[in-house]
Amino acid sequence: MINYTQHTLSNGLTLIVNEDHNTPLCTVNLLYNVGARDEDPNHTGFAHLFEHLMFGGTKEVPDYDLVVDGISGENNAFTNNDYTNYYLTFPAEHLETAFYLEADRMRLLDFSQKSLDVQRQVVTEEYHQRYENQPYGDLWMLLRPLCYKRHPYRWNTIGATIEHVQQATIQEVEDFFFRYYRPDNCVLAVAGNVKDAEVLELAEKYFGSIVRSDGVREHTETMAFSRHYDQEEPQTEARRQQVHRPVPSDSLVMAFPMCARNHPDYYAFDIISDILSNGSSSRMYKRLVKEQQIFVEVSAYISGETDCGLFIVNGKLHDGVTIAQAEGAVWKELRKLQEELVSAHELTKVVNKFESTYLFSQYKAADRALGLCYFYWLGKLDWINTEPERYKQVSAEHLQQVARKTFRPENCSVLEYLKQE
Image (cartoon, rainbow, N blue to C red):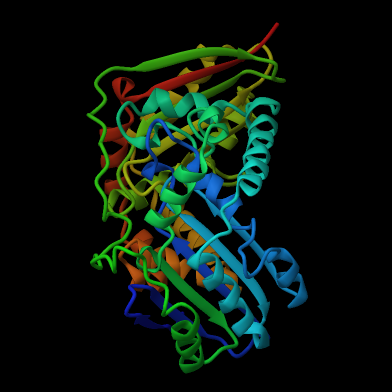
């Protein structure tokens, strides 16, 4: 059980505190309600660019990492389609320094052409390294526009094209910052060896005076669903794309549209993915990897987005196996889920494994702080203590219903990722 207190500052900043006096450490986590889905289609990659710019320094603190090193801390950040997250872990006696650092860069970055040029180059190099010069690196660059035609999930966090970041101007960067990097668009969680009253006092001291020129935006019940995005029409025909790349083996990717994160079917999809491929006793590993040797490796997983995401099967083929053979083998496993109820033993095993993994993930202060931010952002803060229960409520009949509704040829997008001869 994670105990927490919740506060809202007058400038709209949400503060959540988890006291844990069994550790000498503390984590400050800030989740900003801005991701790749919030970008203009002609200016993509800005959310990820800002993840880099936030470490570029301010007028007060030109070198963020130098100060973090001085308090024996570690920090990192990540951007996805839905939000951007920053965390800083350090010995708890340095809490005030951490608050000073994070409030300073929320208040105002040191926007300069030099800083922008440096970070644009860093992002460009990341693009070449991760997406162009790595085996299967552009897989998601191909899969997203194949599966999404209207929703902004159709581009990656790195951007639809790297030219958008390369052409970003100082004015565009400043506009993006003041639109999204603001206290009323952020949830701040502090977990570790702290006291609630002290944290609230420091939050008021360092964050309380940060107010944007347009005032405080009205608080919404859930940050995750506070904005409207163009939604996909139901898919009515199969989609297929074939590419050739310098990779060691052919790869098959099959993607099916699935529900949003707050839908009850979300847990059924997650359980199905584990039944198919989580561990050496999973169905596809036993039959398609070990017994039939169709795939060298194969996995089923959900993309995890907040709006309607994807259920994906992705496998690398053994030499001599055709895409048609591999695809047929996957369909056979999917049809078993439609025709036969999952046994109570198999369902219980998967749910128990999730519960143990989830509970272990709450051991570190950093994980608790992120979890508190995420579930608040989702509009379901109390779920942080009850998430395993939603998996336990999924029945075999529910799994079969979801499988029958989802795994249809006309609802499938196939990417044939073939090695060049």
